[in-house]
Length: 606
Image (cartoon, rainbow, N blue to C red; front, side, top):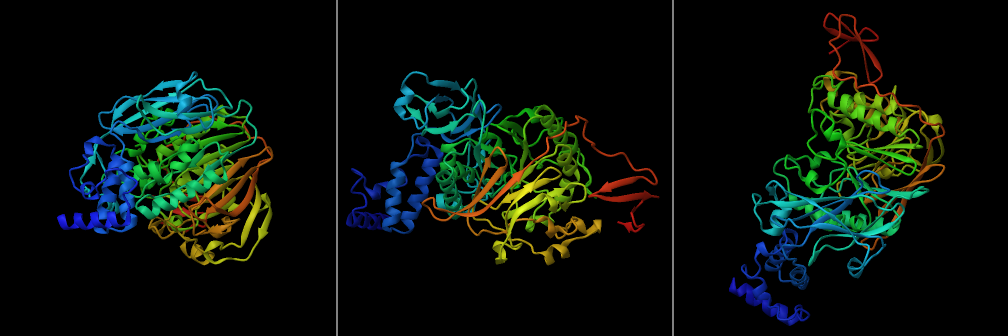
């Protein structure tokens, strides 16, 4: 080891890497006892560990310089990290905040000033809003867990665990239409400064972002997501918020990795987090009994407080009105937590009684918004590898009646990692409403990048919902299924439907009425709420400088006013069918006789 230190010292001195850092002896820096983990924040110390390991393995100029940088970036243990603002309640007057500190650091407030791009000096003046935070100690969270990259990079074993303090605060009484700057911490230990703008008192045209499925798992995924975040902020600096429908990280279950979550906040999505609030919900890869999602976000928890069987995470189903749009953010992740049909997947008490009733109440209580937009991770319709998952038939059976009753205009989805323009879809028979589409451009089919040869278009949602998946902001990519494959995957046999190789949507490919393909680059979409439409502009992030290419532009319009939403209860678990009883499933009629089920043609189905 001494020989290694001497070699590193000679190398460093010869190239002058440490010249700018006074009295920094690289041999001492590389010694295991110089910097104690207990003195620094978890993120800054483990980044230092990774740089030290890399320098030991290869004393290149780049590695040695990175080591110097990480020493300079070490933060004392009292510093806050993983900060984020989230919409929670009325965006005209409220904003929520959450952040982490090391275990035992329980002090902390949010400071807010009514000034865009405020400096540290502005927080020492008059008019600073100070909001105390509630603090809770997390469970023991595995740090590297299943993430082999984090294990190798930091040198920490998969079994290493930390507790953290999670801080949450809700600012109320804010002024509509005001640009604010904010920071968290306490005297001597403040975070960087971030920004948001409250909704205008009479909100006119505005834009927001959607990006999804970063799947943080290693350096490549972090870099791709950060490239997308930088491009989004540079391209749409006026965006009011960013929707993120799940799969923040790669590794779920009890052995998941808090390092992945940390890198989402500290590196991958940092540019967006500092520029605007987030609108998150959970994805299947975020699923963990360690409830990392709950610890990290501070969104409205009304739904959880009013259901008999609680979802795993807090704040994954919530709503808000912004301008002329009612946003319905929801999760289908917990469909199994109350009784459901495990055989034919035709009902789920959680989805029909709880999520469905919640949808109806939000629409009933907000009848005057022009557009109703839902945001969820899972797909009702999709055209890549998740189209044959076992869950979508259940989701469609439970949620399509809800989408119809509530007259949802746009369903923003994640999960499928492909760029997909779907519908508008007739919820009764799962067919596209072609008469609702105009101004669509025919372009050459371009391999996997656009298998439909369609682009642009105006989509009217008077009689059906427009479904959209904006690919991925990260590196994990799926590819579109073509017509031949989709037709081969179609089945009416219940025994095959849930084998992860089949679906039950007839003529599925016809639902893909616009651009459909894999952009092969991190992708985000700007949605602008205009007086006459919702305008979608999708971009790929082309480099680390924030440069982009326009992928697709389209519009969603509604010409009819929404009808009043009935507040009836969900259908729940159906009663046992009597002999000759009828049931509808995915728009098809089935009849039960003598314990056997037949379709409308009299053919028995198993």
